[in-house]
Length: 151
Ligand SMILES: Cc1cc2nc3c(=O)[nH]c(=O)nc-3n(C[C@H](O)[C@H](O)[C@H](O)COP(=O)(O)O)c2cc1C
Image (cartoon, rainbow, N blue to C red):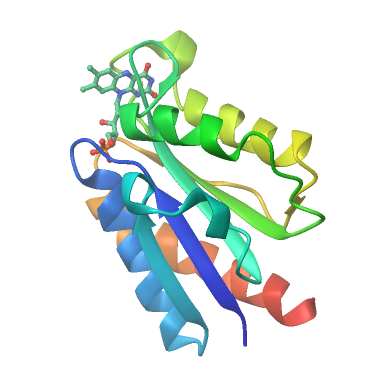
């Protein structure tokens, strides 16, 4: 069973809801999970895990959430050394269709350019997360669990 660290940024709370649901489902499957707001995380410790999940919504025409945007430079120097990773991204097309779910691209780019090993397609949530918690999120966790088991 894996030790998983989820680091997220949120302004309105949606990303927190998704991350807590992901954590609860992973724990049900026997993993241990640490869920941390990025502004309360020790950046030096993010690699102390078997799998790192980064989660951020998009704000302001394609930017990361404001706390996450401050957090990311603090982990820019890291080499993730093939650490298993996954991305959770939230967005809403009504704000800016050109930058819809742009945080997914930014987080994926972070892992790719820092030698992380992305385990599966990102979990992308559009608009309110509530309708997705019992289907899309559960399915994604199931896939992640399979990937972790296969490591
Ligand atoms: C001012 C503002 C700007 C936003 N800009 C974007 C955007 O450019 N692209 C996008 O996909 N979503 C955008 N969103 C939608 C948020 O990403 C979405 O509401 C998300 O669920 C918020 O997550 P949070 O509650 O965890 O902060 C924006 C929302 C607000 C309030």
